Image (cartoon, rainbow, N blue to C red; front, side, top):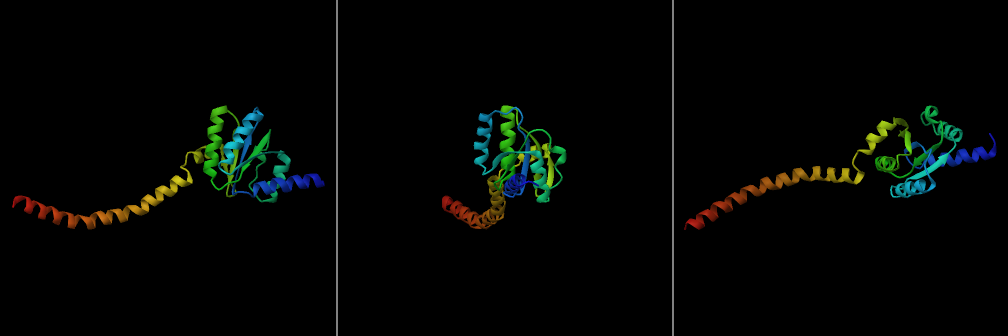
Length: 169
């Protein structure tokens, strides 16, 4: 392989190792200003949008032992990588895709397993990591709150009886 191609493969490989997921998108018919807007939205999730050559991506994916992506490496391809929130990035892609009716997600790879575009769309429907943490915290607090309510019930009832006695007198 020529040295230029090896450098390109190394660059794409470094992009692919930035996160445990990668989304492949068809960026056909997307304008430069739309790509710029998408990159800004992805930057909020610490993700990146890179246009790559299919052959270079194929070699880099094999080098990193990712699943076989040959089926989706046709036409113009961009990769979206980075950040620690794959569902947040999928949500950005889905929202942007609805807004401008492009780009379409070809496939996703999460933890070295391929995901269809429908599965990526379902991933976008999941709550954000912050919302999941808040739900977990609520679940962890619920037993303590219930116990406190039960323990507080006996003294409250006793005080209500004493107050009723005092009101009669």
